[in-house]
Length: 376
Image 1 (cartoon, rainbow, N blue to C red):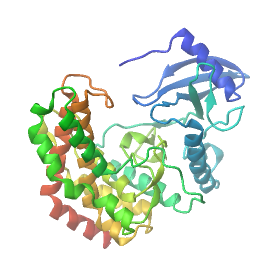
Image 2 (tube, rainbow, N blue to C red):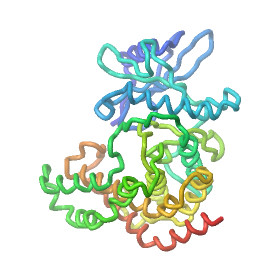
Image 3 (tube, one colour):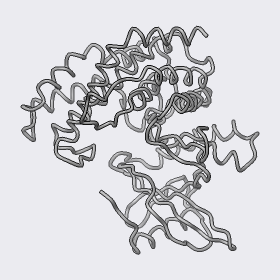
Image 4 (cartoon, one colour):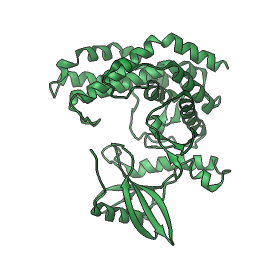
């Protein structure tokens, strides 16, 4: 649903800015981004004749009930990254890692009188976002940036980061939730999803591949992003250079394969995530190869062999997981993923399952691609 900034909201945003020590005059704000979790505003503040832009974001406490703990983890991550970019000029450093402002009453989240929680960051100037991957060069650069993110956080000092969303990539858990939703069928939709349900349940052995290997120690636990869609990267305004990884709410312990798998899932097909013409949903081998090249370049040798060998499986698992989540939400009445038309989440699930079939058909060739690139 589209939304606008009302006069009352602008007054609230001025108060939010004051909570983060912003001085000068609030000059207005506009909605920023198309995210569904938080409400985000791009605000203009003028001080001494100079206008600066900041991002004010209302934190969704239904998803993240402890904003202070959430922000403490995020700032640990951004501070660690900022130290690694300390050699860069200040202006360039500000474009390579998000900079959050401390609240006047402590921490990096501010509680407003109406009970809402907010955070504020410097707006990254001279950057843009992308919603789709259009060519291998862009795919390679996106993968390099996400791989570099994991590499730079490999030596993040303890303690272990908190899990902001526990079991976020526990694919068997999502499959069990689908089974419960189908059994209870609260919206009387189960009769129309027999083929999709059977397909999902038939993939139960695949579902546990990553979490079981992680639990057994066959895959190392790392600090990872967990939501590596291309629109969670900022690119330079001109060219394909990736500047900064954003949307850090899900940065927590996990597997690098969660990140690589989600990156493949969200970029390897040129079709939309909710494509109704599933004949267009096909994994592009040239994009997959570019993702492998970029991710290996970004991680720069820090991955163990089991991680590299798991690239194709990871893409399949995370694609399955996303399709299962869409299908479950369809059965439950579209309560999590916003549906813009009847059957929207069912369409999304079908598109994901079609992509999974494509990844399975091409698995042998994709595995050979990984081996060839990894061998140099």
